[in-house]
Amino acid sequence: MRISGDWIAAEETQAVCRALTDAGFQALFVGGCVRNALLDVRVDDIDIATDAHPETVMDLARAAGMKPVPTGIDHGTVTVVSQHVPHEVTTFREDVETFGRHAVVAYATDVREDARRRDFTMNALYARPDGEIVDPLGGLPDLLARRVRFIEDPYQRIREDYLRILRFFRFHARYGDPAGGLDPEGLAAAADLADGLSALSRERIGHEMRKLLAAPDPAPSVAAMRQAGVLARILPGAHDRALGPLVHLERQWSADPECIRRLAALGGDETADLLRLSKAEARRLDILRTQATASTPPHELGYRFGVEAGRDILLLRAAFLEQALPEGAQSALEKGATAVFPLEARDLMPDYQGPSLGARLQELEQRWIESRFSLGREVLLASDDGQS
Image (cartoon, rainbow, N blue to C red):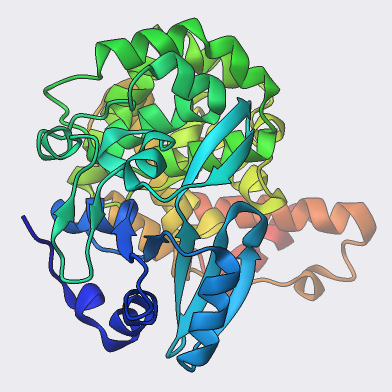
């Protein structure tokens, strides 16, 4: 079996491979680029494994007129920039000792040893520069069946890095067969070792959860996380009951997957802090959660929050209530988003000053909103004259 694609045939990529192979070393595409090519999914990053040591990779890259950058040289990785395109070139490695996220590694010459230290069988697939698949651990059948399975002992793989628990659920959401369910051995190991997640930084957990919730349909994976006790470990109080309905409604309204919207559907305590959300993400999450349980009408949502946020609020509200989206919601959101309140503070002066000015302006604005923006400036001022 061979893979193909513009990325593998590109001259800048083949030049990196030639720099290695012409010197007698191996050059094998590995990991995500091979997996995605086999699944006909877009390839974003190009990783190359080799038996050449990092210093040699750098020397060969310079000799070929390319720019080597020692981005992870302590771990055997050199970024080789060829015609402005970065390629991560990493020397074959094997684990000598592992302890959590960190490991003592040694360079290897055997691709099988390099494969055995990876997480899932679908990520331990390699390809030669001409696209021919190299499958040292027999992971190809798992990939073709869309089965996310740990390499060898799942307990050992997880103990090497507890983030692999979340990666297991994320990869199933992204690449797994929804009808096939999660690998039972991997699921059992994830449940048994879930306490190890407490040793991970919140930044790493937050980064992984963003990726998981951005999958086309993360609902089955998140449900499995809850059942395994994993969701409660990272987001106390969270529940997935509204996530499935939300994904269904998103598809009805052609809304792209978005992690903060889906995070709002999960609920939970202190989510922004636990996942180290940015200030902007935390503000957005708070607005979505607050308004999703309020009764603010679509036209007002559009006016106060814009079309995108208003749409997300309505999607969440419908998912929580397990109802259909309100008719005419999109046009109401758009009308609200373009509406401009016809009064300014100076229009009410000098009759109102200080706090009373702000309060009265808010009252008139709310009256204008409730009229669906139909009341004009003169009508609003006339009504104010009647009360001043």
